[in-house]
Length: 255
Length: 255
Image 1 (cartoon, rainbow over the protein chains, first blue to last red):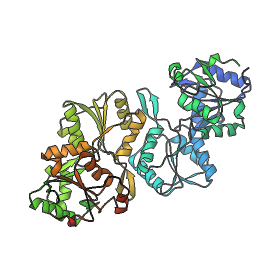
Image 2: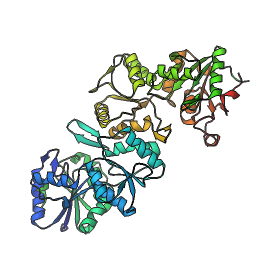
Image 3: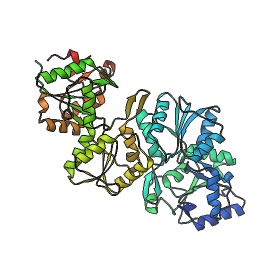
Image 4: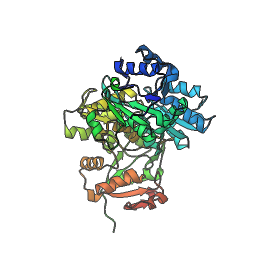
């Protein structure tokens, strides 16, 4: 008999939408969760958007969602730093999602000799930002990066993700960052805490084996791979550790 | 008895000057080479400047030098591509030194579906340049990078060098570039060809063990480490392979 899951963590791109289009089976799935009074949280490695921006997009697809149903890797990064040092100074490089999360956590932006360097996806990256970050890390700042994804799909193909942009600083300084996003357990632990949920009754759902499913496996949380995105059945066969469930679509989930 | 060297390959920063100041012993050394009718070539991993810019700076220090005495890693990169495919299309990212070298070699700049992606130090790097380069490498373009230096000294400390900037593309695509500059043998072979010189009577002189001395060792060329720059006597002791000669200053060289 299958476990009675009470908490559902869901990935976004490839799982509930593809680019600018929703995946109708996923929309119905979340509506069902809501109807049954089950808890759900969207957990995303996209550091560029705020939780409000994510919630708005999901709502526009007809998904019942407010900002409280969203945990971005930027929020998790700010939270991680705040817990280590509540009054930390941080040199952060990133877009609106990271800036807002840092400000909301009450962390202070500082370019020279900060306690932390926090790196997130930044499509306005410059050499000067890299130089400042490298100097700070060499001077002893703790080096944190929102997520390790090396490539991102866009309409032109696969373009560099935050994991590759971050590598300039790690290669130059020899210091490996602490990554916060999936598949790291850090963001998963925060999700559980936010919801006051147990690992045993939580299910992680996503389309990407290397981030979503590995996040579940590494955190001791059951996982569901949905074949609507990155990872194919064929690619999955090559993996040593398998997800708890594999479905062609979320409409195949039996509540 | 010491070999009678006929050809001298010299590094620049840390060897003949330090930042904006010349090293007088090196100036005298090069004057002596000239007086004795010995051949010399400045071989630099700095891809941002043209050979004329380098020659002008050296001349301003009183070093006898024209553009013909300079081989930059940008020139070596353009030459490398030209030999593989004389009519190659190249998406190149870099500063004036690389642009001029590519144009001088008659290579065609092309952003989409080029035969080659050539990456050099670019203090105006943007996400869009990285995206274009990654898409091209994923589409099969051959990936070449001017030099592997991960860090550069400037007045603020060590800032990212071309090797770290290049890593965005290699980490994102999983494709390792062909590096051209020191310590790679490619630039050394080109230096010897340019001068029609023999390995046996050539000496590589530099201050950096990992680039200059390793370039000599890997190419089978004798090497002289001068302790006026990056590598200290202490750091040298830890190295398994030693340079042929070690001098505190080039004034200690006995002609």
